[in-house]
Length: 209
Image (cartoon, rainbow, N blue to C red; front, side, top):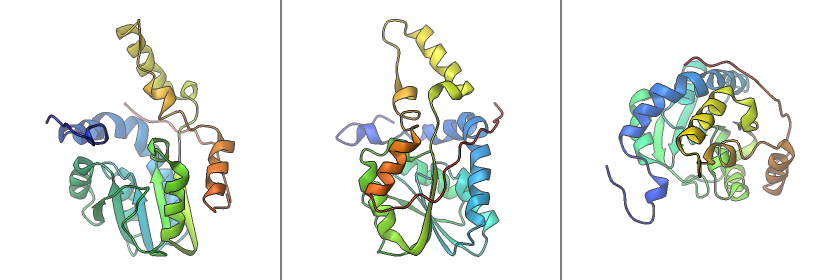
């Protein structure tokens, strides 16, 4: 599918979610989804909002671990929402921009986001929206990648890109997925949005390709 127009850089074709699910979820996302699910379930949430849900790897785990909770899963990309809704049909799926959430104030007691905050154009604005839709005492759980050099899989991908494009290799991995790796910067953005950081942890898990 060819996409043109103002939102072309923010949309994926219908074929991308299937490739994402096949090639990236097992090695990159599943181990961390299991960890984030355990942390979420320990809070005994009743109303969960997931941002940047992608193909639904975290969504499906949340539904299984917290079967009495209402789970609303969102993603900016319509193709991801369509794919995720078939993978985790127990959730309510919505196309949504994290910087302009289409939900009322205080509607959720937990917001979760797995490896999505790095892609937000204005993180403070998005974090402020998260705080708005959280009920008093609600929690926000999310993870973000560490520096590129700590991620063996994507170090190998970057090396391949540099061999394929020796003159001007793409720098996407180090500038975007791994470009929000300083805990002090993350904490400052959260504080600017009105959050108090209760806990931060560095975690290393093994995926399988």
